[in-house]
Amino acid sequence: MTFESRNPFTEEFITSFESLKTSDIAYKLHLAKLVYPSWKKVPFDKKSILFFKVSEILEKNKEQYARLITLEMGKVIKEARAEIEKCAMLCRYYAENAEKHLADEIVATEGKKSYIRFEPLGAVFAVMPWNFPFWQAFRFAVPSLMAGNVAFLKHAPNVPQCALAIENIFLQAGFEEGVFQNLFLEISDVESVIAADIVQAVTLTGSERAGSQVASLAGKYLKKTVLELGGSDAFVVLADADLDITVPNARLSRMINIGQSCIAAKRFIVEKSIYESFLEKFIESFKQLKFGNPLDENSDYACLARPDLAKNLENQVQRSLAQGANLVLGNSKADKAFFQPSILTGITPDMVAFNEELFGPVASVIVAQNENEAIELANRSVYGLGASVWTKNLEKGEKVAQQLEAGSCFVNAIVKSTPLLPFGGIKRSGYGRELSIAGIREFVNMKAIFVK
Image 1 (cartoon, helix red, strand yellow):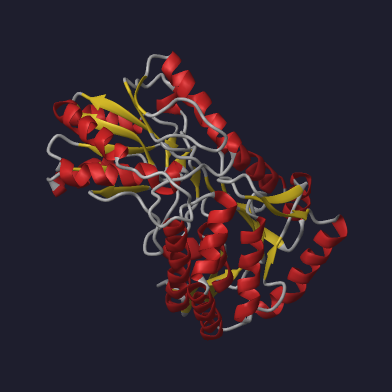
Image 2 (image 1 turned 30 degrees about the horizontal axis):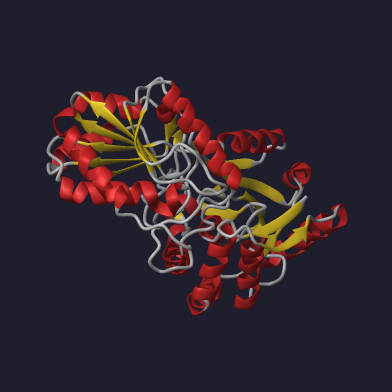
């Protein structure tokens, strides 16, 4: 397999890299095995210094890394820049909080002394996607390394330069070679890495299909997994919502990364009494979006990451239209990697646009007769990653959020990932948690110590 870097906006070929040979993979596994015993003993204060250095490198070279993201997968530059800033913030969060999160927990028992100790496992193997090429990698790597594990990254084939840049950042910061390693792997070589003794955990962010395949392999070799898979997040608009606030956030939530986000809102479930008003304002807000070169500061959107992704989105929209959906804005046809921001209405629970994840700039607007039906429609999904509720009544919004089947529910705010809160899904959106105290405790041995 060739890991090819190609600008999806211009179709320009940039560079390519060959996959690792069997001997190369063996060497990298051996290197991780050699360095792990010393790395796991590095005290928190020294690891924190390293991650503060990583944060500094990210911020100092923010424009360079943001441009690399934009060139490889088409994200508009202002969003790419924000992604780098978020990675730097994540490094600072765990540098400041990891020791507290992993401190021994005293437990009262009949013994003289009892406590829970959190110890590293070995190597964490990550299979990461292209849509947030820096954030996804840092989201697993920072807590894993702070906990004392070492890490392998198998990144998406279309962002190889981002993968190499990330590895180089850790080396620049002073991490010993072998603590964090990039792997240009053939799919056929994934099993051998998961099977390796040093690898004790696997994390994947991606599609259901990829998650199922990797989880099956991890189960075969008895390795713990965390999966963050697809989502069809519900954006629930109650009858008393302030549309001047709700609609701009609805557009933002759908158009983040031109819709290529697992936690982007995809199903807009609106109470009947304000449906027409919401739809009118929503359509108008989409019309204001500015298309342009992703390197242009004024561009709101550009292209999808690859032509095949746009073609797949076209297929989903066409099938939804054939089922009776209405296209009230946009276009149902892809043009290479380009797809116009579009809005579908007349959506019912038996349609593709309701049941599948539309990974691109297409919003499905759905009528709910009342609050109870809005909740029922939101939960009528195989996914359960995130959801949001919009209302002037905060108490009611919180009660609705408590009834929604998702890993994260936000009231009057779009769903986002933050180091302060656990992040992950239920149902076909996966299992396990990243970020916050829950994320750093996913890949550790929670060892019980009892002294009598």
